[in-house]
Amino acid sequence: MTGASVVGIGMIPFGKHITRSIVDMGAEAVHLAIKDAGIKQSQIEACFFSNGFAGRLFGDITVGQNVFWEAGINRVPVINIENACTSGSTAIYLGYNMVTCGQAEVVLVAGAEKLYVPELGLLDSGRTELDTQLGMVVIAGFAMRAIRHMNEYGTTPEQLALVAVKNRRHGQLNPYAQFREAVTLEQVLSSPVIAEPIRRLQCCPNADGASAVIICSDSFARRMRKPINIKAAVLCTGSYDNPQNLTHWETDYRTCRIAYERSGVGPEDLNIVECHDPFTIAEILHYEAMGLCKEGQGGRLVEEGATALGGRIPVNVSGGLLSRGHPVGATGIAQIAEIVTHLRGEAGSRQVPGAKVGLAHCMGGDKAADTKSCTVTILSN
Amino acid sequence: MESEKADNISPIATGVFTLPPYDAAPPRLLGGFCPGCKRYYFPRPSYCRTCFHQTEEVSLGSEGVIYTFTIIRRPSAFGLPNPYGVGYVDLAESGLRIFFLLDPTSIDELRIGLKVHLNVRPLGHDGQGSPRLRPFFTPVNPIVAFRGASRSPITLYEKRKNQHYRQGLESTNGLFQGPSHLKPQKPGGTAFRVFMAMLFCNNRVKFA
Image 1: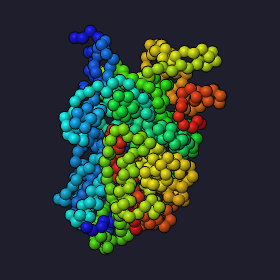
Image 2: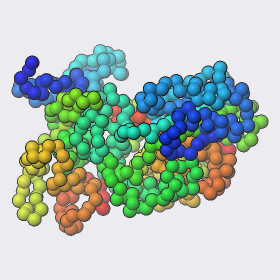
Image 3: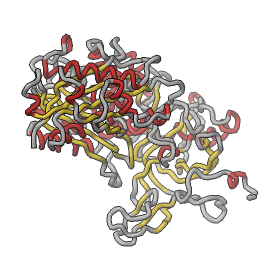
Image 4: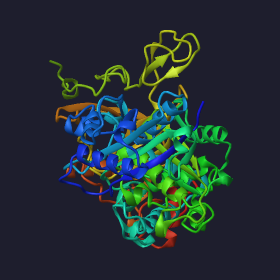
């Protein structure tokens, strides 16, 4: 089995791209990734495309073929992927597996999403689901964990808000982020409640956007500029055991543990983390699952400043979903692109100095008090 | 056609709760039971996920305790009142912890550990505008609260009912809006807040 590396990244700024289509945005990200890698389209042997909502919002399906042909790529296998918020990181997982098992030398992974549409409302995971019919929306799963976490560990509304303050501060430094202005603790705590105890400024904005990466085998990577090695790419699905402990996601812990085992690195080795922060509580729970602190101590970790740029282990230096926005299909790939940028030492004013090992974490969907999917990718230079 | 109004309205799902009329027995939740390995499920799968034995439909009773909850303050795609509550409820009989809708007229009372029981009535629609019969959990013992300066105890339940009839399912605009430990604390002094906290929150959430 060969290893795999990321040798090209491409991304368009996330935000409102009202006049642009998914195909248009996706193709631009693909162009940028191919140019960044310095390869030709004809060297790509397989393509993965991730998108969460085009089928539901526009009735568009198998969009990947359209995106890749727009970028001049045809004939090779194209696989379309939907896995909620982990759509992009699931595509990375599949591309990584295809390369490491020797089926292809070079694969392209791209994701694009368009969520700025009128009347989108709160997202749910499917109108036919019983939970959805009973009032479940995505934010509720996070809000209910927040209330339980506050109850069991004394996590405070201020600690939740500090995650947004930190990530928005980081977002100021990221030209790809949608929100480039900092917010104060008072602003966060006085924004309207969306689902108790989560307020508007503790929710990630919707976004339009696209991102792409090129993954290749070790032997191919040797000819490339600054390859960043993928040490592990793990995808797990919920256990759905009943009852579940809602102060965390068991699947979150399980995925991180497997990724650490496979990569041979531990939380103490990490220099930078990008994690799934659609709502502030999520980042606090992920700190605990990733082993950055003990269970229940996530709120204190952000309060101490350990996860801010310049702290012990910077988390979401890109600004996270909270600043960047969450174009679902593009998010998981954008996280990888961010880690690669830091491990190459090319992150400019937001660079984590001397970053050697990075972790990208994503989580998607809600089912039976558990998550539907969780991904962890560990990279090193 | 049935005579009762609720009977003319389709339930959001079949096989999830007992249907009206409830003259003989109060509404109960329905789930699955595996006779092979004695596991309970909600909702009922056709086959046990552990031993693949065919499951049987069973009553999961109507009683439970709130394990956690939230109050959603955005419009619902299914015409639920704004705000409305949802939570995870630990069912008394089966031990299952299930996601469920909570009584939208009781959001003032929601807290971890609250005893609730099942209720069913027309609530919201199917996403296309057709009304639907929805099950939800409602507090078993409506709490007693004091009305501001007069200190005369009234039950929120009565207040709620009156308001409900007067204003429809609009925001309850009364003693509390949302659980007292979560809302921005403006009215009342510290003593008032501590008193409310003791009354409603036997948990460890910190107060602002």
